[in-house]
Amino acid sequence: MFVGHYALGLAAKRLAPRTSLGALIAAPILLDLLWPIFLLVGWEYVSIQPNPNPFLRLQFDSYPISHGLVAVIGWATLFASIYFGVARYLVGAITIWCGVVSHWVLDYLVHRPDLPLYAGSSRLLGLGLWNRPKITMTIELAMFAAGILIYLRTTKAKNAIGNFAFWLFVLALVGLYVAVMFAPPPSSVKKLAIGTLFSWLFVAWAWWLDRHRVAPTNPSEVPTLIPSARN
Ligand SMILES: [Zn+2]
Image (cartoon, rainbow, N blue to C red):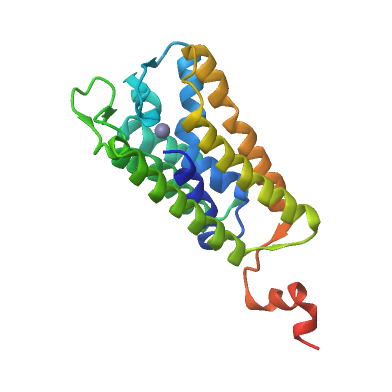
């Protein structure tokens, strides 16, 4: 799952309007931010296999540190605790915790049985929606559209950057999603890992664009958004 994770980050703005979109996006994609690092240092393994179904080209041989359910709960608790320590915003911390765990749940829906519960566990889970690429894409793009709509209804652009940077962010993600579908598979695991590391840029981008938008956290802030509505 790719843009489906971003969809939850966008939608989370409604639950925690005071939390930056950067943190709200980082939460549901955290496991895929960590995974390429673990691949590069040799702690986790993946192999690339030719397959006409672009969703099934990666065989996740071992990834209990980034994608084992027990570790995921640990990552969620760590990220939420750090966030709470810095921001002192409980709703945001809870939303971030749920966001990190949501990644595992969505991956569970789409992956073939390759998700471990913990390191060393022989039981691997996954419902395998990726075997039906059209259904996967439809669901994922519909989720992404819903996420965009919720984020747009929760926030308003303060300036032109707030609009353009947001739509560029959306276009880049959809473009990347479609490109990955039609592009040949990565030629090596190292290239795959380095390519995946670029997700960190989307976190920075989300943080930056969110600073150019405003989310009213109580009704009294609304008139500053629509000045003509009051007078
Ligand atoms: Zn993942």
